[in-house]
Length: 278
Image (cartoon, rainbow, N blue to C red; front, top):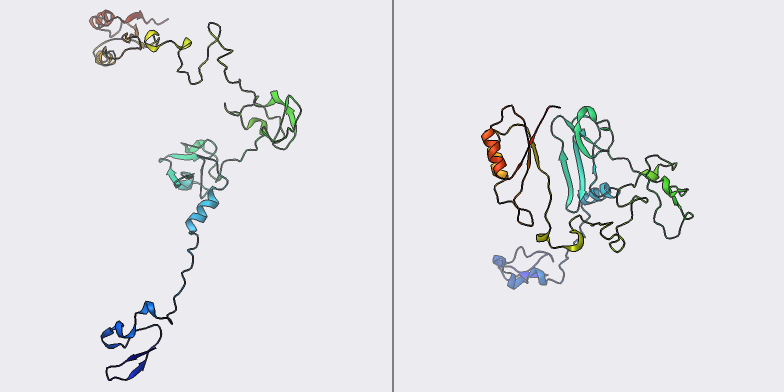
């Protein structure tokens, strides 16, 4: 490409620059972006960030909510743990005087924690309870290694599988010997009643027609140290579903009692009982 100099002569210029054009006049020399000889460096795709790759590697074999160490050892290393979450890695440090127990997944006293040298909690082998094809005969279930044992031996407090997998999934959702879900069609009043979440009223009665029974008791003296607290608790504003005030039973001892306050408590409908030594 050539550009005219100030003396009217043609002057050779490189294909990637407009330097040397009079007063930087690109209208004479041409815009750089329209230069057919302009070489443009192709942008390479961004490599995967090291932090993301590191996080994926850390979390690939971790259970949801599991805490683990980056560095094992005593001191601060035993206080620091991290967790994989949907928003990234989350870190916590146990308060001074406490270490993190990897197996219990909680902070505990230093002397009680014996696994500071472990980065992760033990990976427990799980039994083969759910498979596409049955592995065992009726009445038996498969251990993690594929061997079959009686169903009743699972979650009985003793390791009967050679890999101990029969005692590794014993929560309410996975215990193979747990009680079956309640069937309201079979469990009927007056001989049986069940509620999945514990909030269903027997017989589907309206809440306003069902008195709620809650026992509240207090021990020892009624006096100026606690009478204001009782007045605040039993202020007449807290009522059960049928509109009755909450009442309590007071097991009163003689020593330090203010009997005027005891009498007033009884007047408000609370039960007064005797707290004896024997």
